[in-house]
Length: 164
Image (cartoon, rainbow, N blue to C red; front, side, top):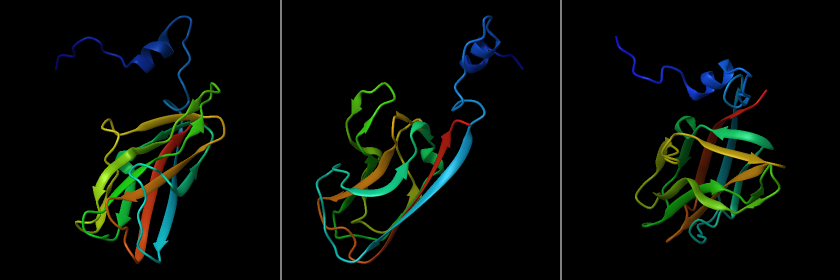
């Protein structure tokens, strides 16, 4: 079997460099954690697309890598044409710079009006989202175009990595 160049990951190359280059703990030696949220619907309603006005989970400060391919979303059907967005709230980056709300960072316009959902989070395309905040951030959602479900539970399990 032939291996084409390069034959090492960038992380391994940095680790074996002389002098050694720092490899973040979020890359090697991190802990995988999971958080769970359940939102029980008692009435139908909707918000503005990508507004992130429903807070679901508080995430920790520091470097966090959300593994979207391992996250799970379950949501009952809403009114026809209803869309669900899942994103992250505004936060202060580790460098002190304010980072704006990204209301569709993890899911954009999922069709809950077409039926109940039971799926992984589709975004970002690379399978993970990295956030490095001073004091944490929220996983948020919003329903737009038409009403959310009037009853039932939205369940979100978020799997993420943090340094040790």
